[in-house]
Each structure stands twice: as structure tokens, then as C-alpha cells.
Image (cartoon, rainbow, N blue to C red; front, top):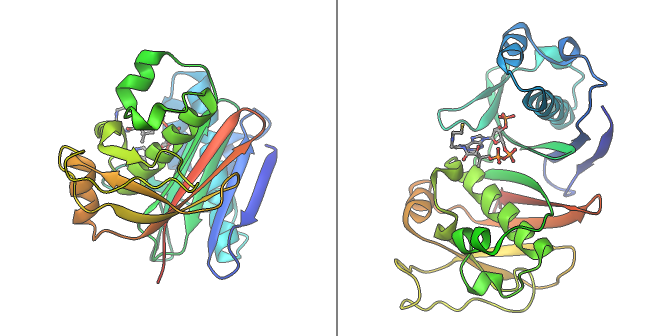
Length: 255
Ligand SMILES: CC(C)(COP(=O)(O)OP(=O)(O)OC[C@H]1O[C@@H](n2cnc3c(N)ncnc32)[C@H](O)[C@@H]1OP(=O)(O)O)[C@@H](O)C(=O)NCCC(=O)NCCS
């Protein structure tokens, strides 16, 4: 399995991401425990098998990096929490992870055990229909309707929903991202604008192509869940890679 990138993103935090190309070159029994092999065998669709295996490979590898350990990958159990968020339980400690796969790529991210709010999403940049954009994005968000921009917004929204542990059981319209997320344009707080507008969530948007902070707002189920978990401050890091993919990371900021 080719490893495309493996890095500690910041200097002062335990925070690792691993992105791997999905292919057949690794044997499942080199990566998976007996229980995981059973689950792997239960998948009927070859694509699902490959992406699930690649996700586990990435997840187990980041755990070894985080712990500076060299456990055999089979010895690192990756399960799910009650919300289906991936989780590693090792030596009595919990390590919440986020896993993603799209097209040729799978990736996993982990931070130390204090980080309960962590989401990662990769999506292939593709031309999608106008109806698709209308279903998932606010009008403001689609002013730049390029496939690249919309894919980036999609990855940000999905990463947030994964961090919240609600996935696509929530409506993507319950997240509104500033028009130029990461550039100078800020979305103003206007109570009249949103269905249930509340003070917006400050966040720092680090984008390789932009320089300033952005702003984001949550509504309905997303807002309720965010409030329920204590409104953690977070930042977003988006990057385009391998020509036609976008990746976004949402991670809790530690004070
Ligand atoms: C989470 C979700 C948004 C991911 O969508 P996707 O297009 O498959 O995107 P990705 O490949 O980027 O992410 C898949 C990973 O998200 C993780 N995930 C699944 N549910 C999650 C949740 N509620 N919260 C956080 N992460 C979740 C899993 O690790 C999964 O990978 P795995 O199956 O290999 O373990 C989507 O699966 C979802 O909304 N699930 C909840 C709703 C649901 O369960 N529907 C039934 C589907 S059959």
C-alpha cells in the first residue's frame, strides 16, 4: 500500500494523518485482527473491501505514529463508538479517529486522547449537477460554483458532521460556510438570515490558498449537537492534492 503522506501537522501537538492509495498490494491478514477479518469478509462489494482495509491500514499506522510505537497492525484494534465514529481502544486508553475514503485514496487522522472533536474527509473533484448543489449548499455558498470550490465545501461539511458524530443523518444545509472560507470575506451575523440563527461559531480556517480567518454557522440538529458537546473551538485545514482531490480536516483547538 503506497503511503502518500504521513506527517505530524503541528509542532506542539500529537496530531497525525496518514493518506494511502487504495490498492490490493497489502494482505488483509497482515493488517486485521481475527474479528476485523471476519468483518472484512462480510463485505460483498470488492470496492468496499478495499477501501475499508485501506482505512484500517491508515488508522492503525497513525496510532503507531501517535504512540511512537511499533505494534503489529493486527494488534491495534479499530472499532466504532456508539455514534459509529472510529475509535482505537488500546491499553485502557481511547483514541478517537476519523477515517475517510474516496476514489483512489483513504486516510485516517488521530489526535491525542483529549480530542473528542475531530473529522476528516476526502472527496474527488467532479462536475456535479446544479440540483446537487441546491440540495446541499446555501445560495451564498455557491457563488463560486466551480467543482473545486463545491467539493471543498462538501469536505468541510462532512468533516464537521463526522467530528460531531452525526454523519449524513444531519442536513448539510444546517452548516453555512462563509462565502470565501479562509479568505477575507466574513459571513456577517444576521439573525434574520438563518432559520435558527444564533451567534456564529468562531473558527480559524487555514487554507493553503488563503490567508485570513473565516466564519461558519450551524443550525438545527447540527447546532444542537454542537451545543450538547460544549461548543468546542475548532479549526479547519483544507488542501487540494493529487490534482483532483480535496481533503479537509476539522479539529478541536486546545487552549
Ligand atoms: C459518516 C458519513 C457521512 C461518511 O460518508 P462517506 O461518503 O461514506 O464518506 P467517507 O468515506 O469519507 O467516510 C466513511 C467513514 O466515516 C466514518 N463514519 C461513519 N459514520 C460516522 C459517524 N456517524 N461519525 C463519524 N464518522 C463516521 C467511518 O469510519 C467510515 O469509514 P469505515 O466504514 O471504513 O469505517 C456517512 O457514512 C454517514 O452519514 N453515515 C451515517 C448515516 C448512516 O449510517 N447511514 C447508513 C448508511 S448504509
